[in-house]
Length: 321
Image (cartoon, rainbow, N blue to C red; front, top):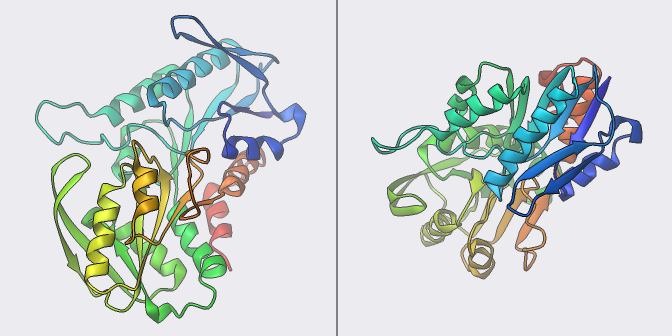
């Protein structure tokens, strides 16, 4: 039997819970000791069950990572047959290489820790770098959320807009493949790319645009927005080069520090669309930032596993008209 353990009290987690029958849910209690130690205590047996655990490893990143590890150990000791982790946002994925000689490759370390804990399979959304899949010896599925969002843009968000007035923009050279996938699904004919130079993390020293945005609505496609500094600078550059409006589609709204306030007050960025892999609803201060619910995709993943189906077929179903 397949059961689901939802470790997060978020909009996404609650939408998943609402879709499940009571007997399919693994009830638990999260205990926190006075010194900060965590304990995940199950309230129902899982012996012989295939358990799907849902938890983004997002802010607070370290606590959520430890919670996933402890819950995994709890499930193993309760004789779960297998453990699949659905982690919509997989923390530490930006540390996929050493930017300087004396730095860690934390994405590889997290992969080792999750495997050692006993997780048998991982499903995540729009990994920051595709090569992270190679850090795992267990199966890992990287759901192409932005590609699916391109399809949704065409069907839901682009009413009354001529596709010839649009241009998809990759915020860096590494994101061109991701932007092209969105562009192809949205049936937008034009694309541009920003070449940027960083001197330190979260700080862009210079930008150069390859392509033309004059008189067009520019849609920046990125896997995540953190401090917002890069996207705001890119939006400003695009407006200076003649873009009529600047929209941003991103999967993960990390939105650390005062990012929400900066984005909300920006005159250059007209709209930010983010999915609910990370829950920031309590911090949003106006309608410039719009959430896109992806619970239907993750519920589809759960049902696919329950019915012994294929993730590839599920993805194709979301890309159909």
